[in-house]
Image 1: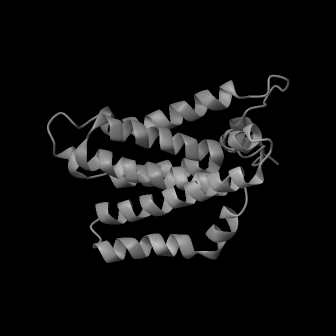
Image 2 (image 1 turned 90 degrees about the vertical axis):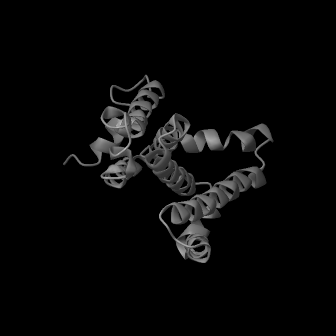
Length: 184
């Protein structure tokens, strides 16, 4: 599969409730709400006023494709939710430098990529967001520590994709499957 193992794990509540479809949809709804809240938080962190940040959340929630995908149990909404949460936590790490923000950012980014591997590309956006921020002026906060959340995301992604690989296939992990799409 081109999507990762996160979506399967998000279906566990539905399985535990005897295949209850409402549980799968509830998980999607909670993740959509998390996406909206994280979008508003990003807006506030980037200097938007309260009304403008709320409008950003409203635009996300009212986007037709988001509404349509939230009605499914596919990996798109979880990937979006974890990606937006990762970016918000990364901005918190950039602004405040607290380790729990950096760890949360790295884990959220890795969950996003484990839902949809192409979300590894959001790490490039995160790297741009880190460039020249307040972290470069604070004492003792320069160097590799600035990039720790992004490195954590890559490390967790690679480790989990290897651990959840199909042992019956030589290249049965998410990385090999995704890269195979680009081979002629």
